Length: 155
Image (cartoon, rainbow, N blue to C red):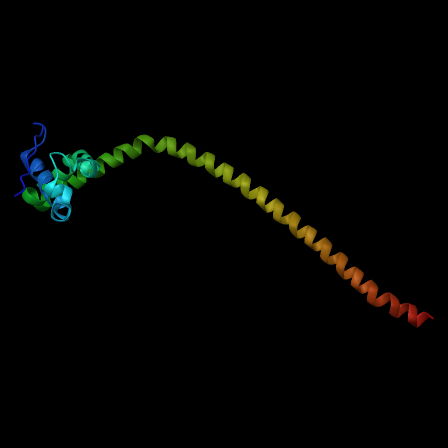
């Protein structure tokens, strides 16, 4: 028999605490069935293996509890209200940082343009070098083929 209990702050609603306990029951079920330490160990024997997960769930209890409340109590209207609140918060945050982002985007675009010009200049030099090498090669080949033929005709 396993007993789950939690002590919670008054700022949380009881449904949030219940949601937290439900999550713990589901999270620990595989370990309670399979692990010797969980079944036969001394008090707090499983603490080293489960502490990080427990800590993470404790940090997430408020928003997971709200989600549970939405699913159990409010239904669709409560979900809409919560989503609207989240969207409003995101928009307010975005509006506050928009000016900073605009100047940063302008700076990055100037750097990009300068780098693009440098790359284009480099590619043009590479093409020019390639043209010089190819032209020289063709001139030499033509000279090697044409000069002996002209010399043979003149003699």
